[in-house]
Length: 290
Figure 1 (cartoon, one colour):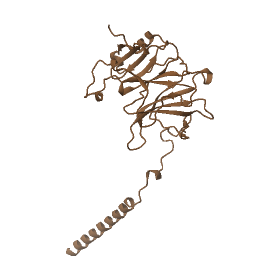
Figure 2 (cartoon, one colour):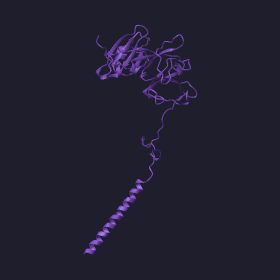
Figure 3 (cartoon, rainbow, N blue to C red):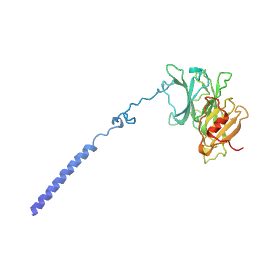
């Protein structure tokens, strides 16, 4: 009886050792294989399109200064220039308003939004012919519009919403120049363009505890009246539509409160056809009581 027990115990130990060795060999096989990089992992083709071929429309636009695809920080809008030198006697240029987080060129670089001028008549294909940089705290915040009045030198006034600094930037746009926008601006250089201060659109004084001590206005969408005299500004933080009457002269200010259903107004009002002031109001705003 004792001999049988000893034999059975020895067999159990031997069987356990064999199993343990087998498990060790299996674990070594799986865990000691060389790791594959992400580039070596084969991903099923067109998994996002459920097997259908992905055919992007259009092509990357090349920057004339680098002959490489243009680099921009998230394009929010395209605005056509007011000249008639393009196809169908319409504007030749597209202004891309790039209002994303911003480009950085080195470790000391500021975040900078940009305007890109695209020449739609460039040959063999349209290309970016100018970039204007807005290093923080300067901003190009979604809205761009033009005066349709041509100055004596053939240029038009271009308005750009200045976002954080509560400014409407003023540029000259001359479609006959190699670089149509003036003044231009290079990366990490403070912008020298003129501007209209729109702090008056706020109902509250600046506070060090909110918006980094800037009045809560944040102009975003902008438009100009058909007679080129009145500027309309949709303000994000002040929740209103600011109206700047006679922007070249007295610059009187009117504020139209947004409705509760349309808080944080940031629409861009483009004038493809002449709009009456009342038409704009009815779309998003209600008149404030005097």
